[in-house]
Length: 310
Image 1 (cartoon, one colour):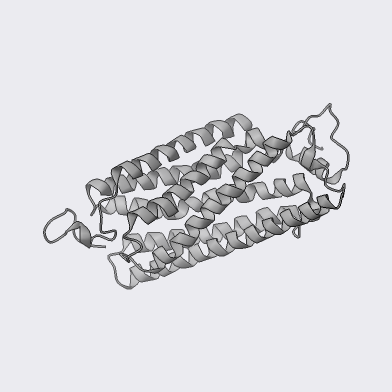
Image 2: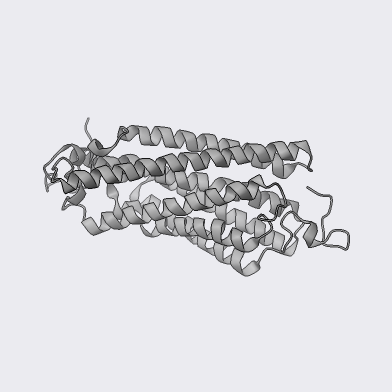
């Protein structure tokens, strides 16, 4: 963005894109959280054999950690080109992987609670939202790379516009997902209040009710936190490089850093391997059986142990 490399009279910190020295304490705190979440997701993912979920979560947490390493580099050298590019690209892309982790669980949640209450077939949750998330990711990656590597001018503006479009796709995707989730919750509640027995999986003894409800609440809170971050990023990026909102670190720390940190912590503490084992590949068969049946699964095969069909 500039030929400046050090803080001088001709290159003051106020002339940088952010206009400040990133706070060491706040950014180091967030870095520690994301390193902790990366390690915990990797450990729990290997232990419970959740390969795809673990992959996207580890990538998302690791990208966040790298992004805050970039910001710490800028706390010493605000003109650091490497630090600037690292934090721009990593912090823009990371939430796409974290959102994908939530999208991957939707099919299993619908199957477990009751697919008859969903307006979409369970498999379409994965296909539709992961596909839209991938499109958003590619747009943000292309835009972020172009904008952060250019020296200004039309190339930077084009990259910024592509990045804005990618974030907009992400916001719309999450908005639609949230509306479908609310509709599903309402239809489930309405059917249960009428005494319908179609959805028996909700209180199966093989899966303690409090554990599932805890996981469901944590996932919903994580989704909302990521959604808040994405909404914040729209005006922050749309205002152009160096706009007033972009130059306010407090807003960034709270509405971006802390929102994603909360999401990562919730998805690590309420890990599906512990609180929702029906998500795993071997255990998915049970959730399908439970969702279709009004009878509990045979106690010989507790949740997660039904042999896969040949």
